[in-house]
Image 1: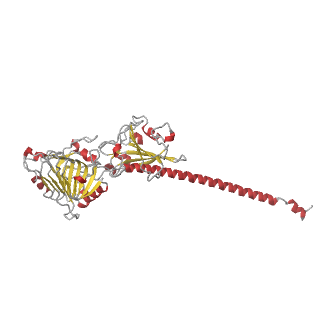
Image 2: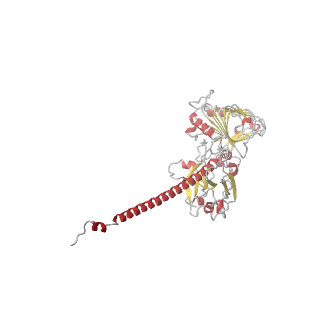
Image 3: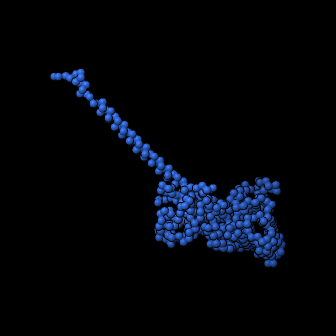
Length: 506
């Protein structure tokens, strides 16, 4: 056997190192390529995530702009172009907030041109209904661009009334198909009741609740990334449930309500039918789509403390022969009742003061007293009622001035408009000093309701217990007429709460 050694063996192993080196280089190359591919994939994923996040928050910004502009206190309030006073937003009426870039065209109703960002979602929601094509389209511009700088890159936001079919929710468990022709409303009283696990159970078809609105936003980036988001919103009412009603709407048990201890009422002294002053709790006056109903009627005069001298003080203030001038729910004449259903939170100075603060935060105007009708906002009108707070005394006496809205006075309200037809339509709250002095001449009247409560002393300090609220009428005028429709029309929302949120497919 011949054994190789020395140079012969070394020559047979020549080239092994080269093969090993080539193999190592190949391994390094494959690893490098894998790292490059992995890095590219991660970069692409990061870019996609970044684009997705940008479009998501851009669409969310559009939703929030629309939700904010539904509130009357917003300087860019959309109310005048949405629906008339006292009327729910009708099906088929659609409002678009458009937000194009400079030189760009955004036209969501043109479904034939994909370059103008068509709203294909609306057709999906209302397909096969009379509203598949909107009956009225109202475009407005976005307020997001500021100082010449572009805002969030949403293209449009749509606001419209919701139905069972558009939401794909059977709110009352009736037989299919889902209702596609009746607007939905949201009952906040139901939502506050135990045993209702989801908001859809509080949706209904009753206009006595808050209307549910759809807000849909489309955002798009130049790279083609898009998001379509949707809110369902409704406005919670102010806590104006003085009558104990289960409805979310304002509920006041009397045309004139006096809250406190040993309250007083002093009516006109002229006896018999010659006196024109009346307080009538029977529901009156239509506003928009709202009509009065006997079921919504109230008493003429209500008082909160049934264990003190309040009832005697009120009856003593009604002149003999004038009993028929105080009519309302039930046969009693004069129609004076103890408001037994008044919520406990509104029977204390602290609770009523919290209501004052809540109304002040959402008011259209807050006026320091002493003030007069000349300090009222000139934009107030029958079609634009306002929430006005006067911190102090308020004298409403020079005419011709017609008031519309919710008026809250923390001092003494002196009501004697000189114009024979000057009136206030809505709700008047005198909470604080709790003094209402009226010498209304002519045909002046209040259509809605009046509530008076004394929560503070002469120095403005909050009382420990309610004081003697007072109402004094020494002149003529037509008095106070209860109107549930005016109460509903003038109590405007301070916010719109999100009932549900979802991302829609495109």
